[in-house]
Image (tube, rainbow, N blue to C red; front, side, top):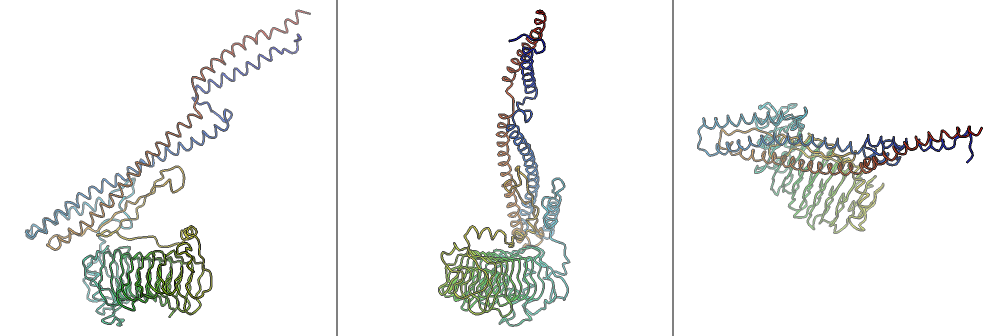
Length: 617
């Protein structure tokens, strides 16, 4: 190497080494003081990005854990207060059983009633005031658990006639039976409104149907012509057993029925429908569950209505339908439609028709347009067996019918004459079917229509395609009441965010709403016996709600454990990527410190090289 004055290569080499050792020393100091080996993207670009993503998830998991803890506290609050209510109800049942013994005088019964009244007030207080963070937990669509305040003079049971334009109230089975008796005796209900104020259990109550039209059913002065508002309550356990025609909760309705549930019914008759035998008015937001049986020849039967000439929307039938003889018209929702519009409705009835029955359909047995008939946005599921002309949606059509946006995946097992996946038999007229579908895999190679022609579009699709199509259909999805005196058992829904994204898997929902009627009178022996049944029904409802709470608590515990596992694993992964190995970094610190000191010493020596050159001059 040459000896120069202007360029000191030795110094430059040492300076470079000094810079590297200083940078290494600084990096070791930074990693030991922060505890991280990745302190910026320059340290490890890929690792920095991965660690940041993990950090975001870890923070979200911590928030989710907090959400679960808050949800657990909320459900614990509801459950604890409901336990207090259960204790009061148990004591009230003991008192009712005591009063029913028949060994107590009026003064003793009044004393027992006083304690029941006090406990009723306390239950209503607890139900009304239980809250969490300002949210009333048991409050749903009703604001409390007590029976709505009404003018007792306007209860149906207290009437002998009805005044046009007035509103009357039904709170017990006695009111419903009285309405039946008055209408069937010819009391006019035109322009009269009836409000159902509670769920009504008809178990053991003798009932025939409202608006039977006299001995032969032809007296239209004895049809129901008023407005019946169910107020989202339920009439349950209705039993009618007769071989007569015109059978249903309402025999003939020429009025309006809204927001009514008929649950667990067992109705037997000749021509029979669940909610209404023959509808010529309007029915909305209602449903029927239970069993409907038709007996006798040449009859019609439907899970919701037997015959329709009116308008029905947003309704459904989930019934078992049986015919024992040669029924003409059998449908999961309606037996026969002679006019009117049915829309936004469905049936998933199990239809078992006798082999001699004629027209059997998953939704409708038979349609004949005496006036305009149309179906839109309707669905039929379930199964149907027996019959001669069977269709997954409609058994048979006569005249011109319009069908739009309708669907069926009913299992068609009958049809000794004609059967079709959608319609069994098209007789006369030009029916139009638009944008309607059936599950082509449900019934093998069965044709869409067994016999006859139509215009429009009707398509068979795979089970998966059908399921996806049905998901987009706006069908009714509701149930009312809860039986056993329950006023409201839904409406206060909570959705907990227990995950870290916006998918359904990150949500946990539950409903705390609960309301029930507490109208207990034990001052008579009969009243005390009735009170035992009523309290048992309420206790069953309360216990069911506690079971729901317990299930939610178990789920929250499971979520807590899953979140803890995720947090632990993610923390471990992020530590592997980001945390510094202090032993390694301390070794690097010492190494770079020594190199820095060596470089500093050698730099002093290298800087003396030009002075050696000067000595040669």
